[in-house]
Image (cartoon, rainbow, N blue to C red):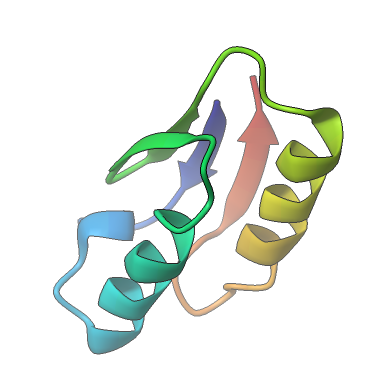
Length: 70
């Protein structure tokens, strides 16, 4: 699971950029669901995929304050 520290509605914001971000996130086969403050992944997700998603989310400074892998 990737936990994101974000203001207000976070990943479920109505901002068009957040909608686009959600569309990209759900294209990853290991993403189960996206909530305002987290992205849930399948339990057997490869570490490389988790790292890729973490780096991708960390670049979204306009929306997220931090990203933590749990």
